[in-house]
Image (cartoon, rainbow, N blue to C red; front, side, top):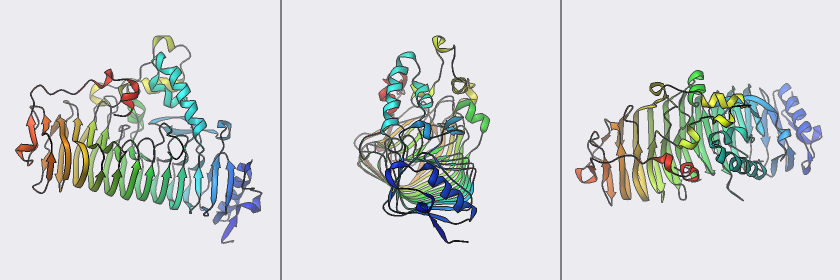
Length: 459
C-alpha cells in the first residue's frame, strides 16, 4: 500500500487553464481505494466539484491551489441543507458527503473565484425585491459553497489551509459528528465583498472542535445553525457538544453568532479565547425570528476580546424580517417552486418562539465600543438565566436590554459606560451597580420591519 499518491500521475495539469476535475477525482478515488494520502503539489488546478472519500486524506502543498470553475454546470445538484432548508443545491467545490475518516489538510489554497456567483446573486435579488421575494433570493440564486461536510464523521480539516473567495458559505459542517477544524485561514474579502460569504457554519452537528481559525469574511464568521422554521422543526437535529477556541475574526457580520437558524436548538457549546477586531460590527450575536423556534442552553463563552467593535453583545428575536418572514405573493403563486412552499410554511406562534437560557459569559473585554448591550428578546419567551462574570467593558453608551429574566452580574464585572443600560419595567440586572442601569417605562423595541432591506441585512 503506497504511503501517498500524486495528482499529476492521474493527468492533473495544474496549469490554471485545463479543467482538471476528472483527473483529480480519479486520483481521489484511487487514494481512497488504497486508504492513503493524495498529495497535490504546486500549481493551479482549475476544477469543478470534487468528492473526497472515506479513508483518504487530500493534502494540498504550499503553492497548490484548487481554483473553482466559474461555470455552475461544473457543480452537480445534490440533496443537502442550505440556509436551514433541505433542498437540492449545487455541490461545493470540495465535498465530504456521506463519508468517514477523511482528511483535508496542508498549506495550499482552495479558491472559489466567487465573483461571478456574487454578481449573479445581486442581479437576481434586484429583480426579486420589487416582487416581494427578498426572502427567496438566497435560495433561488444557487451558489456553490467552498467546502461542505455533510452526513459524515471523523473528519479533520486544517494544518494551515487557506480558503478564499467562496461563492457562498465557506466551510459548511452539516449533519455530521466528530469533526476537527484546526488551523484554517479564511479570506473572502481580498478583492471584493461577496454576499453571504460566511466563514465556518456548524449546522446540526455533534462533537465538533474548531481551533486556530483566522477569518475575514462578509457575513457571519463563526456561526452555529440548526435549521429554519417548519422544515428545521421537522428535522429537529440540534447542534451540540461544540468547542471553539483560539480564533481571530478580522472581518464579518459578527464574531460569534448563534442563529438565525435555531429550530433544532443548541446545547453544550463552549467558546473561549476569541479575538474580534474592527470593522466587525458585533462581538457576540444571538439572532432568531418569530417562526424559528428551537432553544439555546448550556452555553459558556469566555475570554472574548473585542477591539473597536461597535456593539459588544446583541440579541434579537426578530432578525431581518424581510428575509425571515416568507410569504408568497398572490401574483407569484402560479408556478412557485416547491422550496418556496417549504420556506413559507406557517409555524404556530408558540412553536415559533426561541427559548434562550443558561448562558455564562466570562471575561469579555471590550475597548472602543459604542454600545455595550442591544438586547431585544420576546416578552413571551424572555432570555433567562444569563450569568456575567469578569466583564470589562468600556462603551460610549450602555444600550438597552428588553425581556430578560434572571440576569446576574458578578461583583468582578467592571463597566465604564457613558450612559446607563436602559431596561423595561420587568427587567432587573441583578448585581450590576445601580449607576449602570435604569428603568425607562416607555422603552420599546424599534420596528425593524420598517427599515430598508439593506439596513435589515446588517442588523
